[in-house]
Image 1 (cartoon, rainbow, N blue to C red):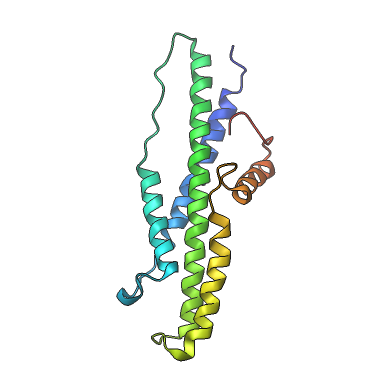
Image 2 (cartoon, rainbow, N blue to C red):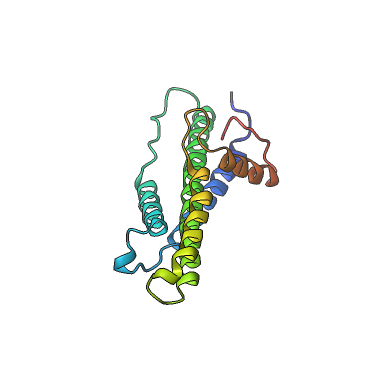
Length: 174
């Protein structure tokens, strides 16, 4: 039996897709030119990995389930729920990719501030070590993978913004 919320679900789909699109735009803005001799530096590698992951995420397809013999409202409800779930998962992945790319971008800015247009040498050792250590502390703990719960800080952030937008958290749709 339809619950009369399909219009609200359709609006939610539009909001999630807009969030996802916005994140992809922000990820693409993290791309920076990399000097050939610095291509294997950790921050640049993270940026490249993030851009590749975003491209793979955009390339993945949503596969709708063929309609069953249920009535139109029930079929629409089920499909909207699947689209919301898929959209939430994609938004989560895009947000994670964006945070990682942004950490790499901050690393590159901090590194450039230490080098001031010069090639790395002995005078830059302490500053570059600080930049690299800060990057590892910022980037690595945030993006570790555990089997129990994939990303508590990011899940909390997504739920927080959903709650600010007026959605009850947790929901069955996301």
